[in-house]
Image (cartoon, rainbow, N blue to C red; front, side, top):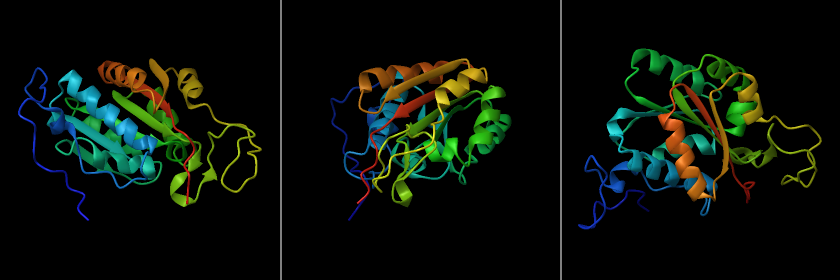
Length: 221
């Protein structure tokens, strides 16, 4: 089975102000579960960057570990990318921004990658006001390790094991506001009419921008 996209481009497909087609912002075919909200967010990122007419090679996408952190493979194949270790994406992003301030930085993380092992790094990247868009793909569970509740799961929510979550949840948007973030938004992966403008606004924001994107819980088989 091939995961490569065909090179065909319809001759009448629209271009942005730089002459790029939307296809120029795409990546490899996704290997995530069919209908996964992570893919919806990837599609929204592709559309947002196409509409903003950012040259793909002027974008750096950085991620950690998890289903969410696999998604940079599926958008903007012609951009810079770095898949880091679990919870350490903010450190790598900080180093990249210090090395080259002229790129547009998009950090992609998950609720486990950010709100658990990466909580300390998340707090510091917010307070340092690093110039980047930080997207959290938040489904309230650890999708790659059989669906255990994550730190953002609502109290009483039912996980795959059938046991209600007994702990209070961490509100990443609220925490970012407390730490002084200048741009904080929350959206839903299935609402592209809201999500695409938010991503465009977050990319255009000078300084740290957080978008906490809610997904339905993973249906782990």
